[in-house]
Amino acid sequence: MNTTVLTAESLTTNNFSDFGNVIETAGKNSFKINNEMCTRFDNLAEISFDIGVGKPIISIFRGKPYQLPIELNLMERHPLGSQAFIPIHKDPFLVIVASDLNGRPDIPKIFITNGNQGVNIFKNTWHGVLTPVVEECDFLVVDRSGPTSNLEEFLFEKPIILNFNLNPGLIAPQ
Image 1: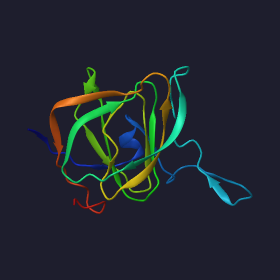
Image 2 (image 1 turned 120 degrees about the vertical axis):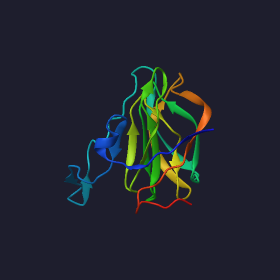
Image 3 (image 1 turned 135 degrees about the vertical axis):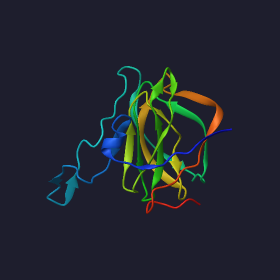
Image 4 (image 1 turned 120 degrees about the horizontal axis):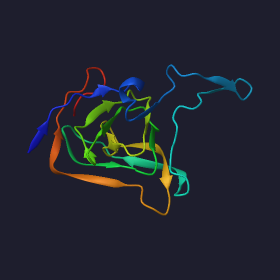
């Protein structure tokens, strides 16, 4: 079996910029609205989809937690639109992404959120499935719906075992 040992990096705007946007309020510009009773953090991510082949939709995904180590069997990408995952909880979760290598995922990178971050994965970017690691939780998902499929999957011949060390202070393996 192909075993790969990876370290989960803390998710930041800089280290995730090749794969998508980090959706968070920390350090972002804001302004007051609604008689100064509400703060608006504007334009945190740019949702994209090919015009004429669908429309943006909002869904809720409920993900069951994964136990470490994780067996990575497949990655997917969405060639017609981006996909945003915004947690409706405060638990950290993993974001697994990879660059494209001749039409297939390259070596995956693993990021861990701080519990207050979401992600918008750029269109056509390889990524793993929704990966909570603490408990079952809900995510608000903004993505594309339309008459044509927006999903391409890649199945690994042999699974990659994500047997990694989490950065101290984030979460502990189960």
